[in-house]
Image (cartoon, rainbow, N blue to C red):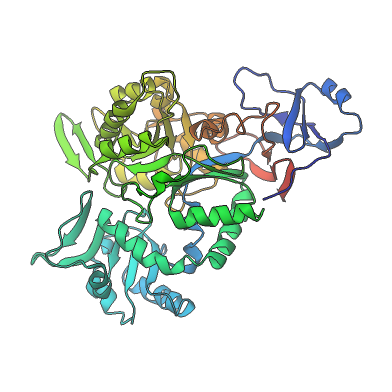
Length: 519
């Protein structure tokens, strides 16, 4: 945690983007005691004699970026596991797993992360392939989506998964023709395997070291706050420990969730601090729920008049939401397919209060939606937390899967419907650099083709979504996200024009009025 700058500072000599609707761009901005003290023409500096000046030299000053859906506490652990993102077959996973086993000789599980579809190898990778590697410990190979994995036979035994184990609600244990588990665990079937295999890596000292290293990288891209979009109890405890010691480099909004990441709410946690508890450095956000799968989003739509269905819907969403709302928490729901979004809207309506209270319903992803659903979300006062960086990954997979009655990644339709949007990365499931991934949202370029160009938003609108939009999604609009007097002086200085073909770069990042990163 950085210490606020007490000597007043004046930023002048460049464009100042306040992200405050209707406000003209000022010529100067003054920071005092870690907060924005004044904005306006250069005449305001007369009220601050002797104020130190930061010359922008033609660069652009904007609020620091807020990643509204980032799995920071989990991503921080990735360096301890085998990186399989470059693997193109079974042979490609062998050496990285052996290296990981050697680095972590005392860990109960060997973990590989980041594998992607390449040809058909994920469909043929199975428990027997992992068994053949000959490790003396169970092995898990997790998909980059964090929604499925392959586990070896020893691991299946430790998890109690066998021929007669039923599929969990919201999950699937893939089986061969003889009915035996192949090792592929999908959605909630993966969730317990993740919790069991990650448990040995949660020693606080090493976890903190990796967490702080990851946060310093985020600062280099202008990120000054994240919403940790599924914060298990151990991660909440780690954040509290780091914050209490004054070591948080920037702000965190936690989104409480069990260690089994796709499971329902933790009853014990619902007795703890509710949404809003904390301070500007560390605050409790909404509880995270799931309406459908991530690798298997629940879809029911039409193509050329023919019905198309796919994916996995999660049960108990409405009942879980009632429990959460009754405890004073706001709620955020993962909904990727239009079936997931429909059940989410129904659940929101089931707990919506008829008074003027602001429940700030969040939909995480809103990846496939109909116009009627977007209208319902707007009427509920909901917020959509979207990921422009999904276009290279998801866009290439679904570009040939168009629907008559639903739209993929309907960014512009959300805005037209009156739904506030927040920008996010979903890292480590997606690319995380705000300035770079916003180019995809502004062009709808997947890396191979244009996909749904009518859903593009201007590059500057994406920067607003990374700042004021994300602050609003987190209930933080009165403390950050805009450059107006009284708000926290989390700032980013950008070098270059706001051009989606040639995006700017981060020159400096400031947290609470103190420079924390500079090129």
